[in-house]
Amino acid sequence: MSDFGTKFRRLRYKIRHEYFTIENVILVIAIVMCLNWTYRSIEAMSRNSELSEKLNATGKALELKKVEIETAELENAYYETDEYKELSARKFAGKQLEGENMVYMPENTEAARNKHANEVAKIEEEKKKEYSNFEKWMAYLWP
Image (cartoon, rainbow, N blue to C red):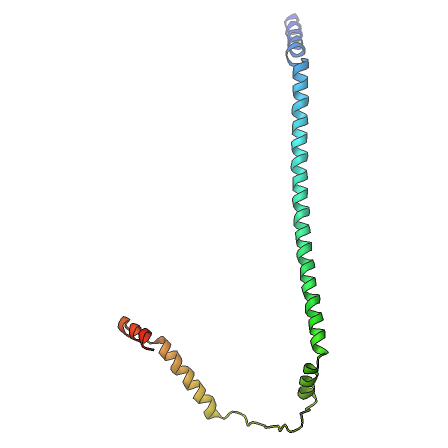
């Protein structure tokens, strides 16, 4: 038992005189303060970044609303013009100016629709056709 007691006393002496010195205590306090300062700095930077992103998003939303308001004001100004009033009267009320005649065109016939479809088909065939290099140069130089 005395061997255990001496070992314990030696350990206590070693801890008290080698580890718990003023220099070591100050060093541990300085390290803890540095870690605390680093943590708080990182936390503040993170918060600032989040607030900056939120501010940018709010600014963009504000700009979008301003553009929407400007567009609505321009539309309202257009609706008050004589040009719009005349166009809406012609469209919805069937009004016309003096001397104007209304001409009603017949619906397109099947032949007219087919003619246009044939022209489109011809153009598409021309695009799909493969040309030789010489033909491409001739078409480029003499269109």
